[in-house]
Image (tube, rainbow, N blue to C red):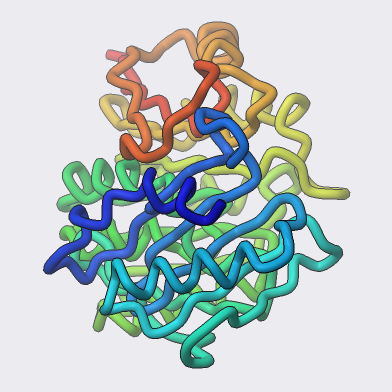
Length: 303
């Protein structure tokens, strides 16, 4: 029943707030019968992501209840990750597909219906907040930058320069748009389409850096296999980072635990100190420890 989902959403948490956030995280398998559902608030849109086909009438019932609970909502949409190409559908309300959201006071472009990923990953909210808290006057290397949310957050918080690297020119174009949206001085940011495993020298050319952010995909055909490639990345960090600099290492694979990262760092980069683990917001509840997003921060401890 639709009410089974709605009862798990704390609508009071978004009262008088215009910031985007996850409202319900079923993919953590902590809610029996709702493992196939995520719900995001992307003001003024509620996006329901489905990993299996819903029962007939279920989505319409959810939309009606959401509209009653959240009058600020102007559109309820669904994305069917269970279908080829992950299509979107407007369940109720307006057709809103290209707009801006706010997180920690920073603006980001969001596009619904253009591609599988909308432009920002909400589970990384606390990671972006950590970057904002630590970025002032820092020179930063942002690997696998996607649409550059880390870069925008860092520069909004006073970073001196961010070098964004991705193997996809399309997401880098969207990254430029995110910087312009926030009126960031474009002289303080660089973008380069690089396969980091083939063009490592181009990364060194702009270094050394005060901070390195590495948020790779788990698997990308012909490009990245995280089991194979993360050790290659970590062993090169000392050539990129200044002594005393910090590295944020992210891992999105549910099949791999934090120990996978701990072991790689211990083996490939022994001259570092563990600083902290950054957990996703509490709404990202997981039934099994280690299945969700992992983010570890290290400091280059070389004297």
